Length: 118
Image (cartoon, rainbow, N blue to C red; front, side, top):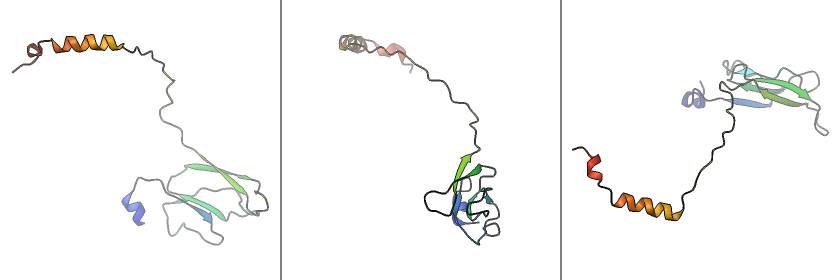
């Protein structure tokens, strides 16, 4: 196991790049290669390894400019367990300074000893 994986075993890890004639499957057997579409011609040479099983799906897009590599769109398969809650609006009333002073006066003349048990 890699040092980073040992120190953060639950963390998601992603390794990506133009690997040409390289495979990480023997070096990092717990990682999966997510790209399933060709990235250069009919070959997959740009790789995307992750420890998140079935975490992404990929689709090829046309090359950018004069590049001989396709762009790759990776999308997460993650769906939230809890759906987003609707926005809740609340009305707040702000006390006037006069009301705050009146409340302070009430607190100052209150006999708090009746609320304290010894």
